[in-house]
Length: 352
Image (cartoon, rainbow, N blue to C red; front, side, top):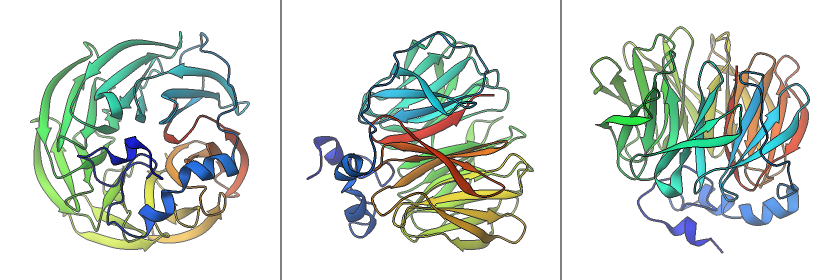
């Protein structure tokens, strides 16, 4: 049986179906609806973690949002141990870390706000109202502007990180789920799950200047370091669409498995990684050939790998059903360890 949070209206196909109905009404929605049972069977995600503690800024930590616990797990990337658990708002989802590592910005989907976490003290120092059902967040390269995808408002909020105030709201497509900013800072790309498109926001004019076709139910989006390609996860068809950002053409579609959701590009731009909820897989995609070069299982059906972050030397995957974070070594493409976090982990970000 689904929780009351699952039945909340005004959102389309993005977080685990413990908290939301399916995109298409069939298939993946039924699979992922078993997540509460999977969390009990597959992982000790509810195990107690250390209380919030002061941490040095920019010291190599991994941050995981836990939807059903309303917390953020803080993991030391050197030891792969949870060192702190921070209370957040209601149903935290997307998370982004400033370039200096001093603040984390957390999309509290259930309370329609952004929580600002001081990473040194482990305290929430500000909360900022945004649109309805905020989910994905993306920071400009200089860290001065946060872009917030508001799934229930069909908009992107622009938040000034110096003042922690929203400066404007940009209309985009239907049910935006995630947002990625190009490394040159010129464009923000927004995956609109409900309208099967990617909106391109010009960061200078703060307007959506293009709409790119992006396959069925685009939910995750990532941009290559050279800003030439966008990798877009299409949940309904289990594929990743590769878009040429200059022309908007679809250069390739890459099958990765049922329920494709999170996608990320390695810092060197040579690989992209995508997760598939159905089989519990992570695929490594060669960005030159647009082909899957390796596939790794992070667990059986019900593990539900959901979102992904890449750092030099590590790939991090949140497993919603198992209540864990998988740590993958990219060269061998093997799981190094699996870390118990909170219930229904969603977003993941790595500090500098």
